[in-house]
Image 1 (cartoon, one colour):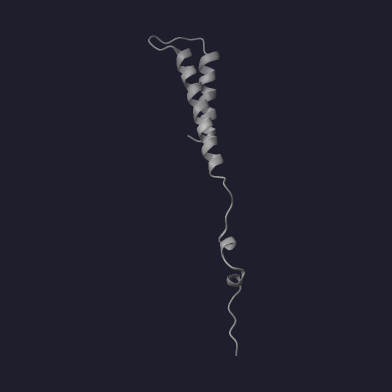
Image 2 (cartoon, rainbow, N blue to C red):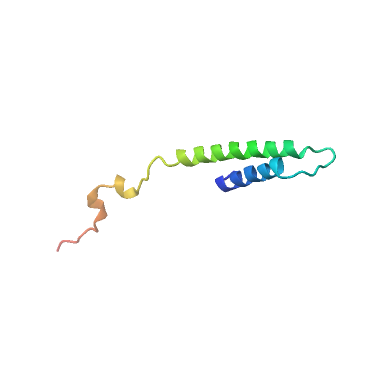
Length: 77
């Protein structure tokens, strides 16, 4: 679940929990809203944790190569 999807799910849950006053027989809309809010928050925390763990540092191949390899070899005549 990406960060945007998690926020969308939590917002949808908040709408169902706090703004909808209609009822459907056999389904408690407030409970569904609460479940979606919790799922959205958990997904947001997980997405942020994964995004932060990937940011260990930016590496580039040039950092690992000696400086002499960056230059083109010259033919000596």
